[in-house]
Amino acid sequence: MAFDYDLDFDNTDFRKNPEKYRVGRGEQGVLLVEPYKSEILAHWRFKTPEIARESSEKIYQMFLDYKEADDFVGMDMARKFLQMGYTRSRRYANYRGGKKYDKNGEVNDRDIDQEKAESARIFEEKWILAREDEDYLKKKKAHQKEYG
Image (tube, rainbow, N blue to C red; front, side, top):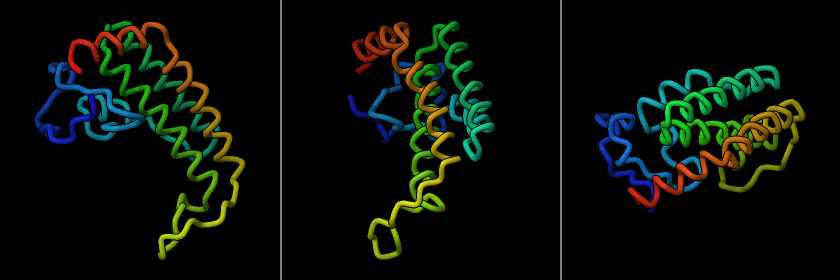
């Protein structure tokens, strides 16, 4: 089932109401679903490879902590932040200032930033670990079967 953007995100605690959570596609809802957004966003950084390493390790540890607590929504949100660390780092690696399009809507020329590319690689490593985790995949399937 698609991610439901019509929910009252300001007043919904998804830890208390996991039945309202939908996985969606990719990073959908990553900046909406509380309390996870606030818990994870505080650690999400990718400016340099060193910062990306520290951030991705912290977020992956949060993924493992949510797993230990049998909290699928937390696991999925941590996975989404790891994925977003990869995609945003790649955007900044490919385009100066992260601007893919110019003011006329045309795609800017790529200007590869190797430091940001390394940040992306670091996040990608942890994202793959999370998205391929066997317990995560079982919990995801069960959540989708039960709630959509």
